[in-house]
Image (cartoon, rainbow, N blue to C red; front, side, top):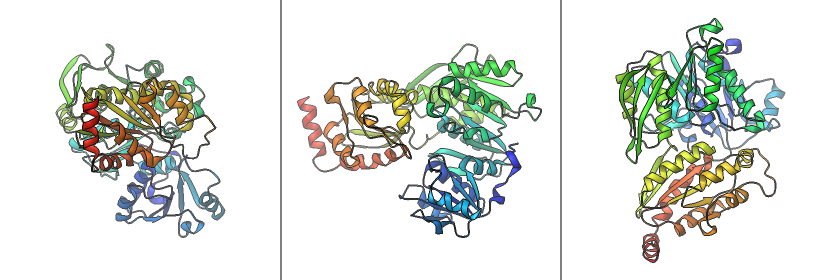
Amino acid sequence: MNTPDGALTAEQLGTVHLIGVGGVGMSGLARLLLTRGIKVSGSELREWPYLAALRALGGTIHMTHTESNLDGVDTVVYSTAIPQDHLELREARKRGLRVLHRSEALAATMTGRQAIAVAGTHGKTTTTSMLTLILQHAGEDPSFVIGGEISEVGSNAHHGSGQYFVVEADESDRSFLRYRPHVALITNIDADHLNTYGDLAGVEAAFGEFARLADSPVNGRGDGFVIACADNEGTRRMAATLRAEGHTVYTYGEAEDADLRIFDVRSSAAGVRYRAELDGLSLGEIFLPTPGRLLGLNSSAAVLTALRLGLPIEKVVEALASFPGVRRRFERKGEVNGILVYDEYAYHPVSVKAAIETLREVAGEGRLIVVFQPYRVYRTRDLEAELAEALSIADEAVIMEVFGPGETRLPGEGGVSLTAAIDLPADRKVFVPDWDGVAAEVVRRARPGDVVVTMGAPPSSMLGDELIAALGAPGTAALGATETAAG
């Protein structure tokens, strides 16, 4: 069972205030606390989509940051995006209140449960969501906190009555090292968050430290284990090291030596299907009604975890066949005037490339127009070449300015530099620094038969509906038809 340092429980937090409560991670924690009957308040500066649900659950939401928000509060929770000199943090320390990082507060909610922590430089949200759905279909009632919203569940967090707690573990700031998982699942280890780790070796070392936290017999605690991808070089190296140390590690993937091996992977607009075998024994065919080879690979991680937990394969297959997807993960927003609009959260080069390749298949004979908002300044700078290579697969690219909460962007960095690096003709790529200009730019470029995807940082999730409205405005269909005929 998860036992964080001090074994603090959620109920011992008292009244909790969350700074920046509107983000997907903080709102998930707030929802979890509220459904456990804990009094919660939060502060925010913009009306994020999750805030209405938090109010409905009884949360108090302040649309400003001020010292008085802390009146009657026992614990203040912040995320890495909140600067240490934030006025509410300063006030909390001045008053002597308990101050916790989001990961510390989340660890407290896991006390007494068997935690399944899903980590990786990309693919965490979808894998966490699929595993949660499998547990639900198998009759468990797991608690979960996910960096996205499962379409079927309609939530990014839930306080369940079962023994399991499924959590998406964030490696970006080392906060995943605060958890004590029963199962540590690692989808991949690629170069990312180099502002924190320095280089890939530093990233790999941190994931190895995380994996060793699982309560496996080698730690003298329990029967926990590690799940790792056999197709990724970083996780392969980690798995070999951990096994040599005596840790229990199970692997998955298309590699011939994977414990759970998948093969004959086929992806289309209708979804992805593959055959699988565990320890050489056939599991039959597995199907998900959402496209993407990478999605299929990540689903096999959930399959392997579920089977090692003793869940029946029939329930696993049933759950994945009904998997509705996760909001912002290949989410189809709608079709208007013959133009399909999708939303996708991908921002790491590997996941951006996989998403664009999949949507390129969906587009078929049509064109793929990508609207991309980079998430972090440091990632856009450090991985610019890789991001540009992935975006170059699209037919056209509309690049926005970096979101970069709490970061300083130097002259020449960000969207302008990324746009220049994309290997597309000048008339097929454009930097649009003004949010209000994006919809008009897409309307100018899109025509019937095209697929448009909004991709990247959290704010870009609000673009999909704007594009649907703009593409459906009077005159848009005629413009597209004229351009199609002219082309």
